[in-house]
Amino acid sequence: MRASRSSVALSILALGAALVAVPVASAQDSSATAPAEPPQNDLYPATLNYGTGLIDDQVAWVSPSSGDLWVQTSAKHIPYNLVNQAPLNTSSQWNTNLSIDSHWGGRYEVGFSLYSQNPEWGFFGQALLLKEEQGKSWPAIAVGFRNLGPYPHEERMLIGHDVQIDSTGNGADVTSPFARHFHSTPTLYGVATKSFAVGRTSDASLTLGYGDGLFSDEGDLGRNYNDKGTIAKGLFLGGRYAIHPGPNTRFDFVAENNGFDWNAGVVATWRGISLGVYGTELEEGSKSPTKGTLYNVYNYTKVDLSLGYSGNLYDIAQGVVLRSRVAELQREETRLHLELAKREERITALDDQLRKAQAGELAEVAKRRQQLESEIQAERDAIQKAEDRLKALQSGQQKPPDQPPPTKPDSTTPPAR
Image (cartoon, rainbow, N blue to C red; front, side):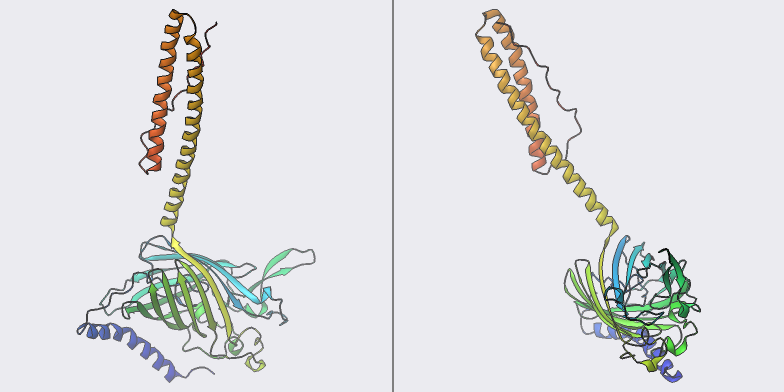
């Protein structure tokens, strides 16, 4: 059954008081001891479907580093087909999602998500209206949207649309019969988040928000869609506790109510690679026919997994440029080695010609010797330049201004005997 009005009011009041009381308590503690600085790598993990946040809920936060990027795939275990309630094979029991999220200018977030294997898709994003400031009592505030795309009947698990195969083997997008009364394009929301440091190696945050569509629309299904778990229609809330055991390692413990369900999980992140394990619809317990006609899909606890990567587009681009530059220098080094070998062969051939010329008549020998010595000296000068460039490359010096490559001297015809 749903929560009473008194419990709804109590939940909102408690979380609102916590958002205001956190900085006050922190200020009181700072009077006795020096304040703990929040960790530097306090990035939020990616949600299951819509960019950074908790599990399903968004938070009022945008990365301060423009160009930060999150790429994540997630999977929710739903072992039954919605239409005929028949069991699925092992691979089809996991509804998978792929999302790409980017942050810009410390204020804006925009991303794209593939909802399932069909696939359906949609855009999401938010704007940070009010930034949080260290030592100030107010929280960060943001507004955003979800499911901006051509699939208006998505529900909270993003399985409202399907693909129907006809007798010829062609597929067509269809709306699942149970989802025809959902209207979630786009879903709009507002959210407030307050974060605070806990010691020197951890931090925490509380989030409170309200939204329509995916946060509140039941599609006229009532109890069949959600048996219990709603605090108030459209209200979502949650919290995060993050531990930073090392400069490149973080553990995020997250819990939330997404408007319908209570969810909790943990995300481990190392050098931008994250792995998350979650339990969703924790308030529902096991599957039971008493929980409505759609009990094989809704109203029972599920397991969710996620695997992701986070980085910065500018850093990635710079790395590509550096790798290209290294490859170019390696190619130039190889070319110089080949040039040295060829010029050594040329010197050997000229020495042979010089010895043969010395056996001829004196006048011709003197003239030819002068010519050959000039050519030898030119080759040695070219070798010296190539060796200098090779040493510069090997010692990491900057590349000198481009110079035309030394021209290969014309072959000379040995004097007739």
